[in-house]
Image (cartoon, rainbow, N blue to C red; front, top):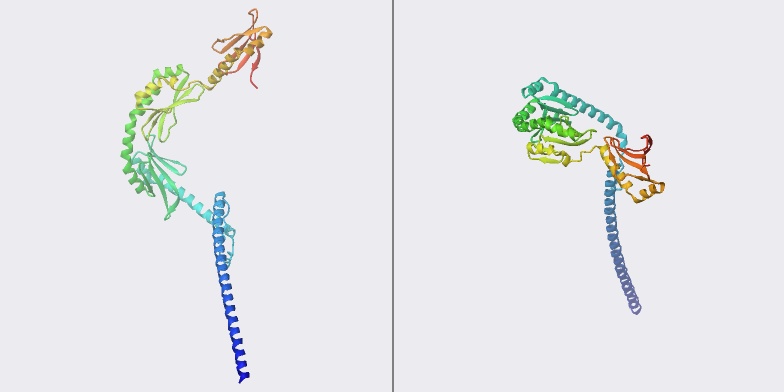
Length: 376
């Protein structure tokens, strides 16, 4: 019995030790698992942040390539996703063929649409009814009456349901519509024609008065006195008027009538009515620099020479040679002349500024050109 008890106790101790060891092992293992789990979470979070960062970088790179006009590549986050079987460049022939088809169709529709609104009996009858004249300019058709623009038809670069469409607007852009048939155009014209005619009728007295001014003898004499002339401007869609130019052809200013707003202007000055316009026309020389380019050059050169002949250093230079130069020029029809004399008052030459060209010449005592004086 004693041996059996000893053996049992030994077995119990061994079992207890095993259980204790197993418990300790489980505890240690559980802590390790928790650490691994925490590390995995941190790793997953880091990977997530990295993926987010890469996505943002990819979007920024795509934006940059788009601005530069470069091809934009796509990078998916699914690494198992298979690449496309064929790159986009393999479709180039299809793109080219389709582009040719669409271009030819668009050109065909352009010709068809313009031909219809320029030449069809229905449209020509409509234009005669409202005294309108059609003129094609590129992709636009302009409808005018009495030389004044009434409507503009602009063909769209695409079709809807195989129909050619035009964006149509009145000359003052008060009214717009999208049309594709003669009936739609007729409806648009009917809705706007009376208003446009009334608008132009209200401006007609102003336009006539400006025309009278352009032929008024008092104004023509005044312009001639100041070496100016007046000329009618080429016809425009939204303005009419006259240019006032210098004798060298350079523009001084324009008197204009804005056909949309009805404003009268002389250069950048707005006139409240034709009476104020007339008053301003007779004082152009006080409102604008009426000098020609050559006159400006001549006056600038005259100022330069006048300053030079009074310069102490220049006067001292002549004095050492025994000569003097006139402090003021003699003016003739052709030039400004600074006489150069010796100490006895004998004229040895002339420094002459030509009015027409602004060029400076040096003449001897016999009025023979010695040289042309030009700055390097």
